[in-house]
Length: 381
Image (cartoon, rainbow, N blue to C red; front, side):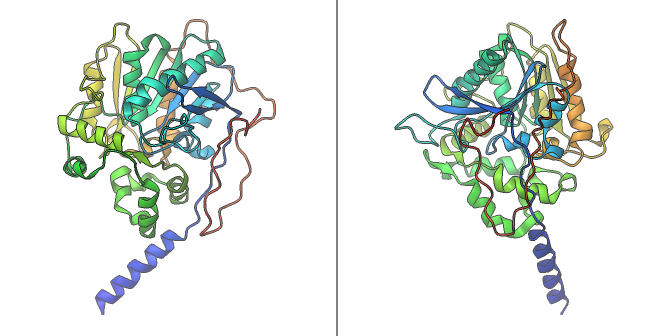
């Protein structure tokens, strides 16, 4: 009898969690530019324009631009826009809306292709559009790892950078890393890893999905927003990239496909702030802090109660968590602002009546998410 009661209670709690309505995105950029890589891909740059210096926000692996600009209350892009920054969010190859050259498969790419082609091209496009010599950079997870690669490839184009939950080493590993390493041989060489299919299969578990425990401090997530993000912010991952991650885990180092380390000393020092959650199970604090053993002008900060914050942050809630806007966003903004060039300041956004916040209706239950932005002329300021 007791077991039946427990089963019924569990079922009701799961059903209630699954039927809390998902919140849709409510932000739209001022306009979208197209950038082209040297190997022929065309992708979008979503801009939240202002008169301040340009800052580029680079998303994590298996995610897309909604990592940064989903809803106004969990959007670092919107927050920085409000502080006067000229905010740019690049679409990367593999994201919905990225256009490969004819004859190239959409998911035939590695992490190195982001590093060597996508981000140099996006950086060049942002600087050409703004007339600035350097930009500021904030990257979450893989986006922070791509900051490290760009510090190696184009340090003279970066004024200062922030990495959030981005490992510079894989020496320390725990259960999730050992499991991924052991299962790496199962990943084929080509094609894609279907994150969307995994989400659909696991969605019945709602917030009880064990992956949320791995990816975040669940107490720091707003569930309707999290459900919306899971429906729209995920991207399928290329299997060549997944196999490259397996190599990092096996060797304990962030390297390119030839085995050369990506994190290496700079000829020209660039200020870097390295952040990670104290409860991050994906990017372990020691592996993230390893960046500061390489970069001369580097500051490491743990995001958790032991450093005076209200909660112990996990991996994704450093960017989209309930407390992130009040606690994490200001840390990053203050660091970036402290490295503004002489004579450059942040002004209040123009009061011209334009706002990136748009009116949206709630998704009806069972409905598919709205289509993502595909055309470069979808928005105009």
